[in-house]
Length: 145
Image (cartoon, rainbow, N blue to C red; front, side, top):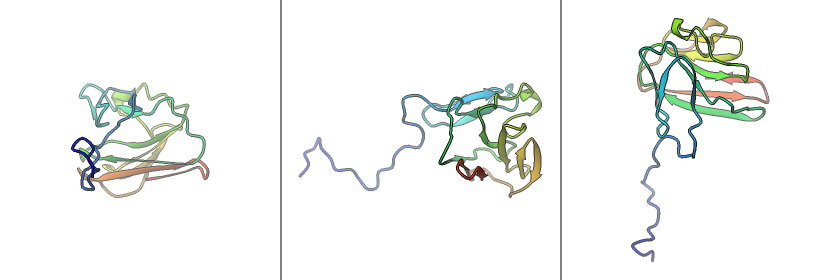
């Protein structure tokens, strides 16, 4: 029998959402945004233009990689992947971000576009609370949303 100090884990206890590592892997790349290092909640700042955030310095060369994001606003944003040559855009104040250049790929559920330098009509409109999954398969060189 466990003592009062050694309790068995509860099956109904939930782990908190967010990041529990030592360093937050998410950094802003261009524009301005606020990143909560515990919950990984990202908020664009009013004077920040079209901010881009990512895991700058993380090099993926093989395997399948996936993340999910909960949409906190039904507004215009682009979510996706970038390669090592992506440095953000000096035109963040004009609305450039991930997906707007040749070294990044994004999905925009507000305008219903898939982005890689130019938009292609794709997908359905997202709503507040939707969860978007982003997958990159480095072995087959494909990206899925």
